[in-house]
Length: 431
Image (tube, rainbow, N blue to C red):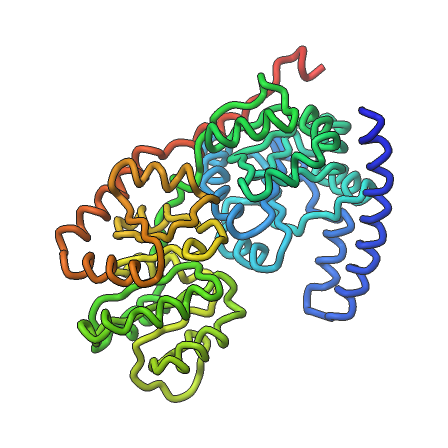
């Protein structure tokens, strides 16, 4: 390992030990029901590989987006080998709660151990993975280096490097290069991602195009409580416009510009789903200041008429998208880089985005090439475009149909990734 990396790792290790001590005190002070379990898992006390497993596959997905993208791969692995034991680790609370509900094919769901060497080594001793699969770009030095020491084959699946993060990675290239050299295979979402990994020093023969698993995610089926919610939103109303994964100040800019649209369609319902559900109260307050009648998903008590519905709950956006008449994908009117439009496309919905889609540039480009998405410059243009789509059912149907065709064409990455995870290395490599 280069001298620079050898010098930096002890400092990194010391920083993690200090952070872990502080985090442990924080967890104990919170006194949540499962704080002891979380602390144990953070210290490396993950689930133990059972004796009868044909193989152990440790999959790490840091947050909700990565978790949702890897679920089709987990399903495909289980179809390929029912006796494979899958440990799924996630880093934050929303992802953990969602994994417990949605990752039915994972044999164990745990929090990710802290990236201190002794925590990682303990987790590796307990799970004894044949394969460590890291989703997208979680380049934790100790996790990757210690997994390689243990003999596990480490792979990056659905790998990507956001354009906004690439500069920071380049600054630490001297550290990341020896880490990437310990990775057996890197399967990227796009050619741009391949070039970025190569620029960081990843061996060229290990970086290949694998595709994007988000195209494989099955559209969510509305549950009974969500069906009731949809009926409540639609009652006495007209079309539903979903503003998905919005950021401040997108909601206010859109609602300020939507006056003419609502005057022409006073029965329309606008569903606002902020990316951070904790902002629900602030979004609702802002809408009321603009004169809108507002309902929040988490509100209790008497319920009157409304034109704006704030979805400030987790795990329900996909199901509401399924019944939308038009969808705006947020984070794109402001310079956040946008969010994933694939889910709405899978439901054959007409989709509109703003000009800032650099986080999903390759995905959006696929839809633009097929005239399956509308890109607007600002909130005023957005409201005009939504009005045109709602006024023209044939246009709405055509946009949605072409969007779903793109999704169908791009599917298949999950099966390819599952085959890679189930590969047994040649005897010479194993030796």
